[in-house]
Image (cartoon, rainbow, N blue to C red; front, side, top):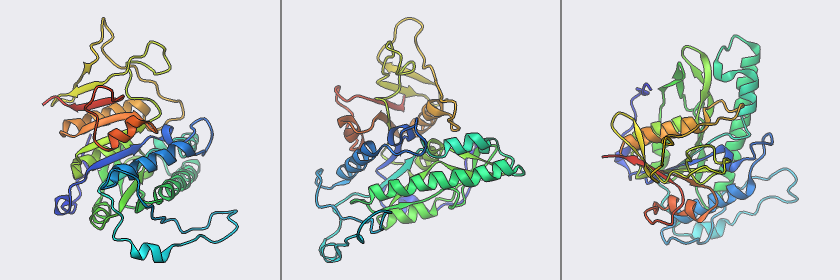
Length: 332
């Protein structure tokens, strides 16, 4: 995959990024229901992120940062200005970046219009581009609002930041706003987006591709994928014979091998299944991008959202045998 070649601010000038988190679309939305948020999973993910960021390792006083009035609210939002002004900081290590998938947002609009195939001369594609961005940015706002219960989060859309592709490969990716936001203590929240493409006119840039680029640029200590299943399986998880792959190693060439468990017979690989409406490649893209990140020397943890295992992954604590998930790391 071609690398985006645009001059970036030096990320090492500030504190090193601790973790990049991918909130999987299937984990935080109800994929069978159009534009439906999985409220319980999203709340759990936000609470665990706050706990992982906490200097004390525990939940403390929460600073509410969503001061907007939602439709149907009987009164204006209550802002504890005095309490906030008296707080000596948030007590959080905010050197995290969050990237989320679209789930039941965006994929429907993109697949119905063919945005991922390009061709803005078509009125259908142009309308679909607008519809896709309306959908994914609305989800981004809801995730930022959920995180804002204690976490100083700011939404950032790749399209609005000038990110673009060439034949679906990332071509331009200015991360200056991301780096500057991290420097002043904000948590950037990016998402898969409809973007312009130099040859195709437009396409879909997946959250997994965004994470790979950010991992290369920011060199985080680790990357966490929160999904709707416990990790990577040797076949679709719905198969009763599916085996959870606990550890995968990636070599310098990008080839990867299963370390744990030792699979018998010819069952050495992974079967891929992608939903018909998924315009970003689904689990196949996730595994390939995770392997590319591991080649950089950054461990990748894939586990189920809303579990004790997801909290431990966010804290970087996956070394014990009772942790349930998949670790993808370099074979070096």
